[in-house]
Length: 184
Image 1 (cartoon, rainbow, N blue to C red):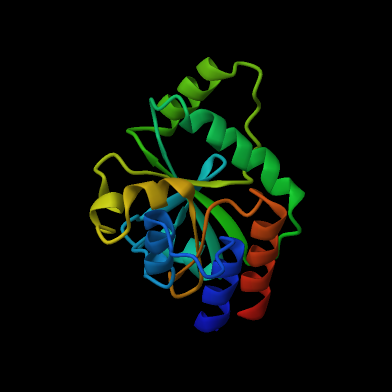
Image 2: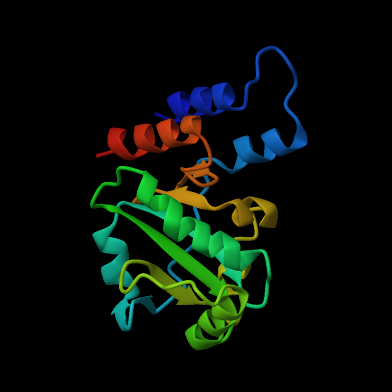
């Protein structure tokens, strides 16, 4: 499976007999690494909190989207994920987890509405955790920050299977479906 994923990623990157760029090398090195996400006690879904373990046991595949409160480019990314994820045919065992560096959900949503006042949060659809102490970054030092900022798809063993949003291109969506459907 790892060989198939590596071949798929190489094809996706459009590499034939050329040398890999530094970015492509980093992506290749990151695929298959384990992301440490068990540092959170609970996950917010809408207005309710669920234990992290319950959340993790429920979903085999999770897209980790790392954002920062107070980061102007992060608010459009948050909105894009919430609107574009609807373009995919998702399995019941897939979820998006927004990991937000910040102190409170209220602060993040307040800043989000300041950025785009007409935006309406989907109630209870997405999962979020607040990370005021950089626990996610501190517990994943082997994953470059720019890679984390692209988003990571992990499997049930927390192995990184795809880097980047599945809706970024038709080819990314194909890779996403291949990964999520082959490991059932």
